[in-house]
Length: 302
Image 1 (cartoon, rainbow, N blue to C red):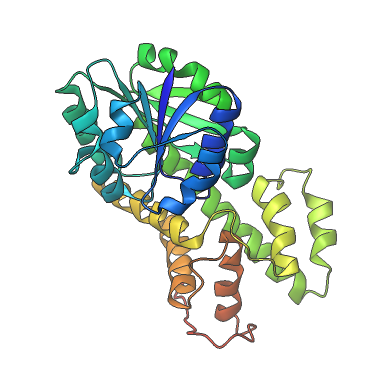
Image 2: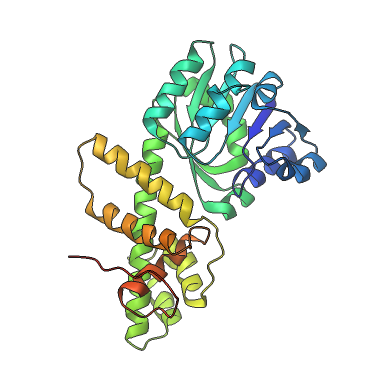
């Protein structure tokens, strides 16, 4: 099976490497060419455009930053659509708008190309280990043709419905992740103000009803002031924007989503967009006047 892979960032590069290790023939393309070097050394073929990736592949995977980027590499000049053939499958593993996903899928179908939207959760550690959770929208028979690929990339592969629904479930995931992250920030801040070692609090609560991936993995990083990105705030904020836009289209009011989006926006405003999502605690510190950082403070009205 010939695989094409477009987008070799924090998530895409280790995912692609796992496919190579599993014995797949992989053709790669990335806007920043230098990011392909390690993969070529490990056996990948280098394409000069997304179109050439499609010409050489049966399954084309994209994992890029935002909706416009997906549209560009698939439907743009020298894009996947131009090089794709009837019977090919495009798997978009980015996190983008469900509505744009449906539009792209409809265009691809004009040429007999099937599409799955298959966003992922699990961060860079899950991408490296091949243990991602993958939420797949599209036809069940198309998913069945791609299972050997998905099984290399993830541990939990769930067919959630028709095209676009993978993105909708991923946005649910991002609401859960970000609001839980905010709760961990508040708990760590409350603990420190109470004179308690936050590590002890984490140890005491992580196996009870309050336990979560964010508490176990991000809580200690907040305490250590380790803000290296497993998932950057810029990308988290992009996902929250997509969730907000989708909620508005559904005439929903989601107050916790609105609040955490505002907190992340403060981090971006203070130049912290390239830091990990655990740096959300800095916004909470600014609210409480406890940060020693030179920063733009703000207040919330409750």
